[in-house]
Amino acid sequence: MGNLTTLLLQDVRFREALNACMNCGVCTAICPSAEFYNYDPRKICDIVQREEDVEIEKLLRSETIWYCGECMSCATRCPRGNTPGLVIIVLRKIAQQLGYFVDSEKGRQQLILKQVIGGCILKRGYCVHPDMVIPELHPEQGPIWKWYRDNIKDIAPKFGANYKGNGPGALRHIAEKNLKEIRAIFEATNAIDFHHIIDRFSDEKRGTTPKDIYLKNIYTANNNTHNR
Ligand code: SF4
Ligand code: SF4
Image (cartoon, rainbow, N blue to C red; front, side, top):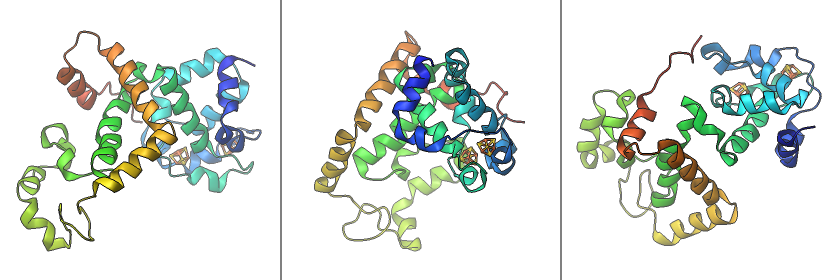
């Protein structure tokens, strides 16, 4: 058994997620991500259960582990009671810990996710907040997104939101004492350490490239190998 298998087995989620996989492919048949991406959860389970470090390292450095949508449909169908989606969560964690995530286009997006989602939770108490979704960096939001942001104070009440207001409602202001509790959870669970790890390895990968250019490349890069 190699070092990477030892790392995998240290995580209780991995031990819970993978009994003996019989390679039946039912997980791949049900998987919505496999419908769109060059992606096969059956192969991932097969690789990790063979316990060969060289193959597992290739997997950790590849695009593959970032295609899973974590819907857990696979868990409902596996005849062996496996949960490939949970195996993949642990693979992602190790790819982050060891810095392998920067070797793939989808892996490098961890930096964006850390900033946009992780940073938003810490600063505002929301996973996603319109103030953080900058139109120039999110063309997928479509042409009205800028208009929406520019006019959000007028628009939000029309769908019952309480944009930056006190009291209940979507998009309400989150008080500093509540944000402190969120930060304490991030500290206690070591989530904040993961933020630092992602920053450190991303900085090493970026080298002398200016930060804004590196970020824009992450947003826009497409090697056209992802989809079927
Ligand atoms: S459904 Fe279960 S047993 Fe079949 S390939 Fe997927 S993980 Fe393995
Ligand atoms: S959790 Fe991941 S591997 Fe499982 S069905 Fe959903 S997308 Fe596919």
